[in-house]
Image 1: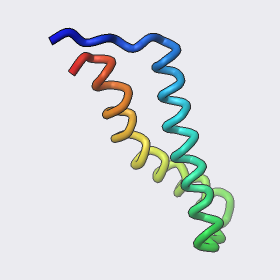
Image 2: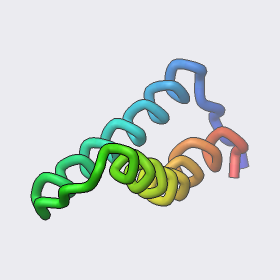
Image 3: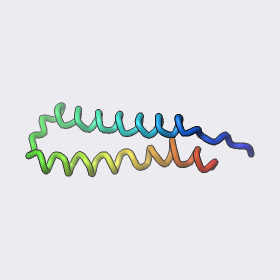
Amino acid sequence: MIYRTLSTRQLILRIMTIISVVEFSIMNGFVFFHIELNPLLEAAVDTILLSLFSTPLLYVWVLRPYRGE
């Protein structure tokens, strides 16, 4: 099978899209569910959720096509 590799521009655009959409969703979730945390705890929860939700998406949409799987 012949796989087309992603260009640098495509990689950067995909990574930026995933992180932006996930971060936007997390922040809207905080507002929608009226979650009030102190700033340090909010940053920690945001970081953990961003990592948990973006990692699988990055693997499927960036790493797999880049590696040609």
